[in-house]
Amino acid sequence: MLKNNIKSQFPLLDSPENKNLAFLDNAASTQKHESVLKAMDDFYRGSYANIHRGVYRLAEAATAAYENARVTIAQFINAGEEAEIIFTRNTTNSLNMVASSICQQFAPGDEILLTEIEHHANLVPWQQAAKHYQLKLKFIPVTSEGRLDLSNISDLCNNKTKVVAVSAMSNVLGTITELEPIISAAHKVGAVVVVDAAQAVPHTPIDVKKLDCDFLTFSAHKMFGPSGIGVLYGKRSLLEALEPFEFGGGMISEVTWNSSTWADIPEKFEAGTPPIAEAVGLAKAAEFIQSVGWDNFLSHEAELTNYGLTELTKISGLHLFGPSDAKNRGPVFAFTLDGVHPHDLASVLDENNIAVRSGHHCAMPLHRKFELLATTRASCTIYNTKEDIDRLVEGIKKAQKLFC
Amino acid sequence: MDLYQQNILDYYKHPRKSGEVAGATHHCKTSNPLCGDNVELWLKLDGNKIVKAGWQGEGCVLSQAASDMLSEYLEGKTILEIKNIDKNVLLKMVGVELGPNRLKCALLPLDALREAIK
Image 1: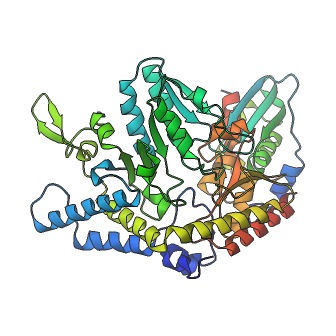
Image 2 (image 1 turned 60 degrees about the vertical axis):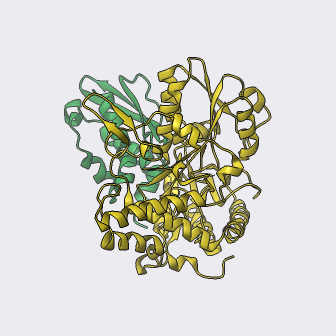
Image 3 (image 1 turned 60 degrees about the horizontal axis):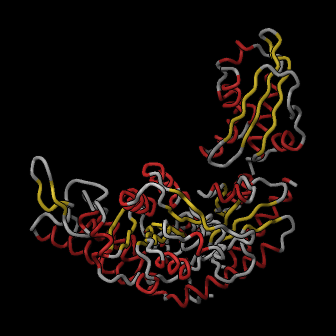
C-alpha cells in the first residue's frame, strides 16, 4: 500500500464533512486532486482569455496554457505529436464524433465489430451509424467468467470489418482487455481500431504507439481532472482524412458566403471556444498520475483488487459479477446480494457514509446477458484504502441484517 | 436509518395485494429504465368501482412496498376518485422523505396506475 496519505491531497475527501466518507464510485467519476483545482483557479484568476484569437498578452498566455496541456496529454499517452490530440467534451462526445464521421466512408453491408462488455457510449453511437449507413454490428462475446472470448476473432474480423471499437477496461466487470490480439486481427483485415479508454486511463499506463491503435478516447473526470473535457487521440493520417464533426469558429481556414475550407488538425475538430481551464486541469491530473508513478498505481490497486475479491467473496449470499481472480483485473467490484435489491443496498450503504453505484452502469445488454436487472458496484482508485473495503463489507452485512 | 422504516419493510416482506387479479379489466406494466425495476398492476372494476387490485414486480423495497400500499388503497375507490390521484397521496402512505433518485422508485406504481386507467 502507499505510504503517504494520498486521500489528504483531495480537498473533498479531506473536508470535515467527508472525513468519514468511503468514496467507492470512482468508475463513475473521481474526486479532484488539489493541484487540479489550484491550476484551474489560478488560470481563471490570473491568465484567462479566449485562445487562438487575441494578440494581447493574456490571450497569448491562455493560448500557451491550452496548447501546453495538449503537449502534456500527448506525452501522457505517448502520441506521435500533439496535433493528434483533440480536446472534446468527454469520451461519449469523442466516440460520437468518430462513429458519425468515419462511417460515412463505408458501404452498406460493411461490418463494425464491438464487444459485449461495451458501455452504452461505445455501443449506441455505432448502432445509430449502422442504421444510417446500413452497416452490420457484430460482437466479440464475453465468457461466463467475464472475459472476452477471442477464440473466434479471426472469423469475427473479416474483410467486411471496417471498424473494431473496444473498451480497454470494463466499467462493470473490472476486466482489462487484452488489446494486442484484437488490434493485430483488425489491422490484418485493414480495419480501424477505436479504443474506449475511459475506464482504463486511471488504472493502467497507455502507450498509443506501442498499442498501434488508430483512435483512443478518454475523459478527464475519471482521472482526477475536471468534468467537461475529454480527449480524442487519432493517428494524423486518419484525422486528416476524416470530415470535421462540428462547424463554426476556430475550425476553418477560409470562409466565403457560400463555402468554407477547414483548418489543419487539431483545430479542424475543435469548433467554438473549447474547455480552456478544463484543459489546464486535465494536464495537471495527468501530471499528478505521473508524479505518483505507474508502479505505485499498479501495486496499490493490485492490493486493493486482491483484498476486495477476498473479503467480498467471503460474504455468503454475495455473487460477484466478473472474474474472481485478480489477473488483468482492476479494483471494480459489481455484485448482487441475495434478498437485497441493489438500490436498497446502496441506500443502506449511503446511510453508513459509503458511496457506491447501483443499477446497470450504462451496460444494459451485458446485465441482460447475465440475466441481471441491476448490480451494486464498488469501484476503487489510488486514494482508496483497505479500510474503505472493510467499511463496505460491514455495510453489506448491516443491509443483510435489515432485509434478510 | 430513516428510509427503511418498519412499516415499509413490513409491506415489502409481507405484501397484502401481490399477484395477478383474475378477470382484471385494466392492466399496465411499467419499468424504470434507469434501474430496471418493474411493476405490473391489475384492476378489476365493477361499474365504476375498483373491486380488486393486485400487482407483481421486481425491484427495490421502495418500489415493491409502494405498489402494495397503492393496491390496498385502490380497492373500494371509484375511477373518478383516483383519476387525478396526486403523487402526494402515495408519498404520504410511504411516509418517508425521499431524494430525487429514490422518488422514482416509490412513484413507479403510480405510473402503472395512470397508464392502466387512461
